[in-house]
Length: 334
Image (cartoon, rainbow, N blue to C red; front, side, top):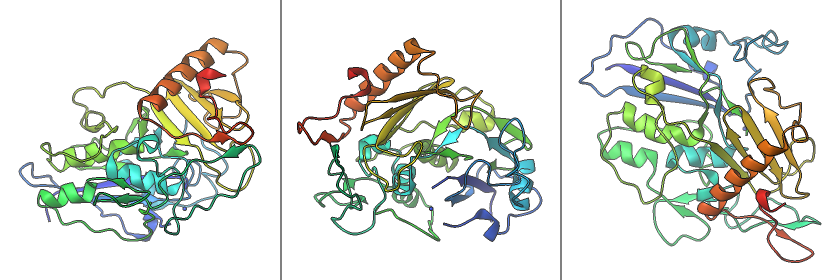
């Protein structure tokens, strides 16, 4: 069958669990001249504590509530990534995975359902943008879509047979906990705290497959994290971004139209509705409970500038203020 590569991406968004599919036991000696078989488990609605395998510096009560033995076994055979991220919700995550694009660029910023229809209810403060409710498309000229060259399309062009099982939402933020098992390539029982973003899977999977000469119609944002897997070379340091200028539905802490940036140890969250900015030190506060915006105004200012400049550079959408019909200010305009 050739050498086998398993990736488990656990995304706190809505599907299937990796435990439903038995993980292979034993090591497989890789044959460098062969293309690896790549299996990606994308597990929705699964937070960083929803597993018996701890992804933090200490166990929580939830780690002792759930029983996920196959994930524990996979971790002993591969590398755990403790700070890999997905988009705010499901459809943007899937689109970023399949395109290598950040959600701000592909504009499938919320969850897709019916053609030409948004799920959002009118808001008293903002008018939400007309995002790409029809998802992605490989053909040009389809309304409210982004034309792309998909990951599956590139793999197929280079000799791979691809298959998708389970929930899609391709017509189509949470913490992703991306485990990678690749016998002979990825050292077992290892861990990486370098942060990643979901669009990084696109170039990484293609590099795993030995595909290095390809073009896409879309401009890509993802960066391959192969150096983190092999231990050879370094992955380029950069900031990562989230963009959700939409309404998910329910209200509550952390819910709303937002954009965010992770830069080093800091994460800034900006709320379009009221201009509020929250700042968290992730290594010290993974649950994002202690807002340090008042304590670190200089960090807030710098991250607001970086976030705003990035969103401007990709021509990101933003809501309008209902009272003035003017765009909501960017974070550095507050």
